[in-house]
Image (cartoon, rainbow, N blue to C red):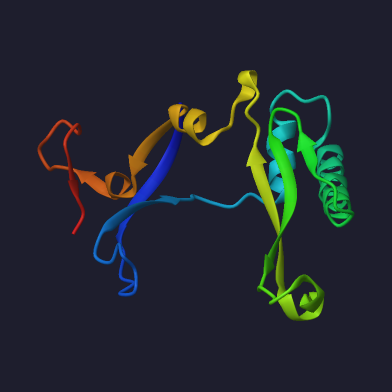
Length: 154
């Protein structure tokens, strides 16, 4: 089962309705760049060398951006769909809407696939994960114990 690391942090935003409450947040061990991902893919019994996989991933990246900038969605079967959204300020009327004035951002979004065989929806993804507290990783075995008990480090 996949292992998702998490930490629990207190909301310190005084303007938030959730001020003072504690929330779980995922923690990442590392970020794989395209080369490292290509190496990983090639190590999974692929007939392609890491350089070939890297080339395909780089072409995918550039073509994805190109297609999104042409107002197209890009669906990767078994993974999900990439699409764009606008961050926009409101105008008093349609004829007063000005792109330079009202559009504040263009964002790339991702909607996980929900096909039955590789469902990546939030609910199904959650079922595939095992959660491990970052505090548990920072814990050390108690002295004199059998190593099964852990005590958080000071």
